[in-house]
Every structure is written in C-alpha cells, then in structure tokens.
Image (cartoon, rainbow, N blue to C red; front, side, top):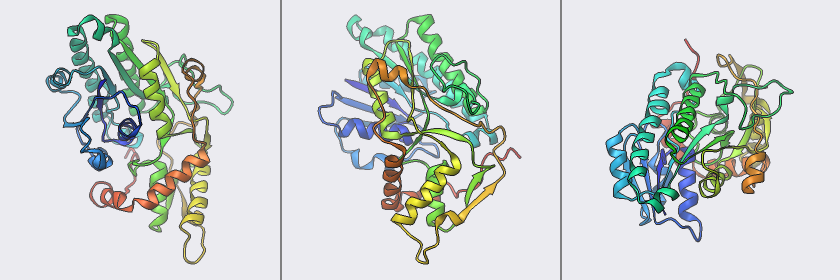
Length: 355
C-alpha cells in the first residue's frame, strides 16, 4: 500500500507517520509526506525516521495541482490522507486569509488532482482508492452546559475563521463524493494533545511557560470546556477509518475527556510539581494569570464517538490522566526540540487579540 500524507511534519500528521512507520506488520510499501513547512511544520518531528526506505519527503503546497498529480502518479498512490491545515484559532482571528488559502482552496485543489488521478486508475485500484480528510469538532460550533455532545449529524455552525474554513473544506469533500462518486472519508476530532505539539496551543504552552518561570495565561474565567484526545489515539482511529470506514461517511473521534481549561492547567501544574519541582517547593499553580478572553471564544465542545465505537470497534486507550502524564514526560525529555522552536519560530507572544 502506498499512501500520500499531506501536512505530515505537523503535530497530528507526524504522529500518524511515526505510528505507521514503527508498527509491526504494516502493509505500507511507501509513505510520501507532502508538507509546505510553514511555521508549525517541523522536519525534526520525523528526523529519526528519515532513513526508512519506505519514507519519501516532498516539500510543497497541497494547492499545487501539478505537483500533487506528479506525486500521485510517480509513487502510484493508493490513498491520500489530508492533514494539511492552518489550525490555530487565535491566528485565524489575526489573519483569516491564510486559512482560506490552505484549508479551502488548498483542499479543493488537492481534491481535483486526486480525483483526476483516481479516474485514471484501473478498475481494481480505483475501487480500492481512498481520500481521507482530517477535520475538527469546531465546525459544529459551541454547546451549552447541558447540550448533548456533537454527533455526525449535528448541523455545522462554525464560530471562528478557522472553524469556518474547515467547515468549507468538509463540505467540499462531501460534495466531491456526492457529485463525482469520489471515494472520500472524513474524521472530525476533538482537541488533540501529546508529543510534538507546537507550543502556541494550551498544553505545550503551559508546560514550557511553567518550566521557564513565566506566567500561565488562562483566557477569561478558564471555564471553557474541551474534550481532550491523546494524539496517538487519534492516529490509530484515522488508520482504522481509512481501512474499514464506509465510503462517504464522517466519523467523530473524541477522547471522552471533557475538562475545563483551568482544570487542565491545574492538572499540569500538579504533574510538574511532582516530576520537576521548584527548588523552593512553590507550586507551579502560583504562575496562573487570568488574561482577556479570546474574541468569540466557544464555551464547550464535546464529541459523541458512538459511531466509530460501534461500527469500527475503536475507543481511546489513554485516559486524560495517563495521556497528560506521558505528554509532560515527553516535554521534560525534549527541551532541545522546544528550545529550537521558541528561539527561532515562536516567542510565545499573545495571538488572537483582534486588535
């Protein structure tokens, strides 16, 4: 099996690739990683696997149809997995246009190139071909405290430029399946966390700021609730959907771990107190600082993943407690990885203030 992974040097994409190239009995013959290497794309995420003879890296844009077409044909691709996206809500508030360019226009051009390639395949390979699009629960909008969790039939109601751009891309994928019979699958996931997470996001930012003695900025009252999914559980779900999912279907993937942001930060502080204590015994929680909330901040997300559980037999392996402990251990052991980012790419400045 030959697969094309887009955005494979990012957080979720690189964890997916690591899982596929290190598992035993993998059917993979070739894995092609197409990544533009924008600010969050980091080849260091896969440096130890670069010599694997099955792995091919190509720097480039999913919006470059000629390049995508060449890669599909040259490597005789059997499946496309689209992780490539601009994904940080705060950045979308500051500058929505890159999100439209990558998440909407880029996905459209990737679909175009993939569909034309698929049409050229012999019957047996055309029947087996798949295009899997990785998306987010943010397309569904926000929930009240007593609302049922998002299901695959929840109407889209995106509230941020990021969420709107992902909703548009999801609609395009659906349209290509319905209009052209193109064999698509879509996954919508809850908040991911784990190794190789770019430190603009809540959990890695809090870990690094805590260790460096910086304030731990909590937006608003800190009671925004998210469902937290360990990234390796997400990667295994995507692989299962690719192999066994019903064509044209959407599968929600959640961690079954609803937590308020403030509770997440306090849990992180307690883990760091135990694993890397301050010399004077002060708790890291003393560094928590409340800051102005994000404009239009969604209050609650929750995922109903009964469909993937019942149809495909998937459930998350990690609880929030075990996954977060693994995450903290990874960041403590990989300060060189984080130092390179914070010195050269991101100085942990506040984003998304909509000034």
